Amino acid sequence: MFPRIRLLTPIFAFTLALATITPTFAGEDLGLPTADPESLGMSSEKLDKIPTLLASLVNNQQVPGFVTVVARDGKVVHFNAFGSRDVEREKPMTPDTIFRMYSMTKPITGVAVMILVDEGKLKVTDNLSKYLPEFSEMTVMEVSKIGSTQIVPAKSPITVENLLMHTSGLIYGIFDGGPLGELYNENGINSDGSSGNTLEEFSKMVAKMPLKAHPGTEWNYSVSMDVLGRVVEVVTGQRYGDFLEERIFQPLGMKDAGFYVPAENADRLAANYGPKTGGSGMVLIDDPQTSAFLKVPSL
Image 1 (cartoon, helix red, strand yellow):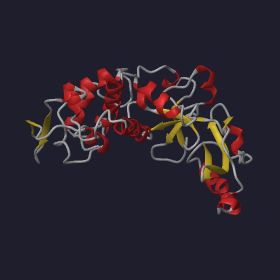
Image 2: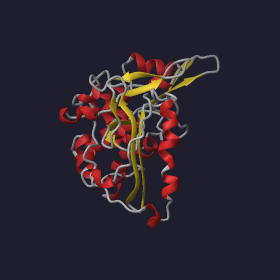
Image 3: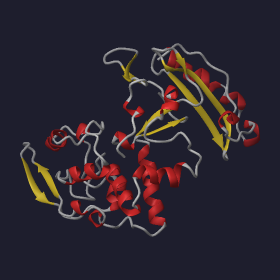
Image 4: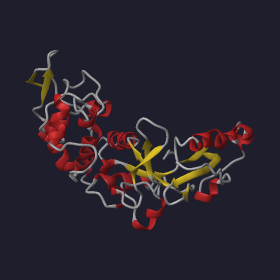
C-alpha cells in the first residue's frame, strides 16, 4: 500500500547480524497477560525450540533478527527477541522494536470499512461513485495478443466489495509490466509515497486511469485499499489515520501503531533489509535514522 497507509508497530513482524539469543521476556514487560504454557495445553519444551530454530536464519545472514510471540486464549506463553534491529550501529533487537507492517495494513483497512458497514453507514454493495464521484465513468484498457490497446467503457461500476476483494480493475503500477502499469508510473501513481499526495489527491489521480479489467471479473493486487482509505474519510468526515486511531488502535491498546514514528520513539525503529542480488547476505533498504517513516505523513 501507499506508505502513508503503511503501519508501523512493535511485535509480530520480521525485519543481519550474528545471532545472540537473548532471554525470553515476560509478557508483563509490555503489559500483556501471560500464562504457563502447560496450563493452556502447550509445551514449554517445544516453545523453547523457536529461538534456536530462527537463530540459524540470523547466523546465515538471511534476516537481522526476530521478535517472536505465541499466545493462546489471550495470554502470552512465549515472548522472545534476538538478533539485531540495526546491524550497522550494533543495536540489539528488543521486545518493543518498531517494524514496518507494509501490506498488513490492508486487513486493518478492511476492519475500518466493516465497522462502518456494521454501523449502517455504508454497504459493501454500494458503488464507489456514491462516495467518490470521480469514479463514476470508468474505462478499461483492453490489450490484444499483439500488444495493441483500446479504451472501452467499463461494463459495471466499481463497488466497495470490489475494492475489498482486489477485483476493482485497479492495479499497482510497479507490479504491472504492461502498458497500464507504464501509464500509472508516468503519472506518478506509485506505491512508494514519493509524490506526497493526500488520499483525496491520490484517489482523484487513480480515477483518471483506465482499469485493467472490468470490475468484478479479475483479481489484481492494487491500490484499492488506498482508495478505501479515502472512502472512510468521506463517510466519517475524519482523516483516515484519526479514524483508525480512535476506533481500532486505542480500543485495542495498540499504543505504538501508526503511520510514522514520533521523535521520542525513533531509536526503536528497526532498519529494513532485503536480500542481496545474486548472493548471500542482506542489504540495507531503509536506514532508521533517515527513514521517511520519521516524518508526519499527509494522511
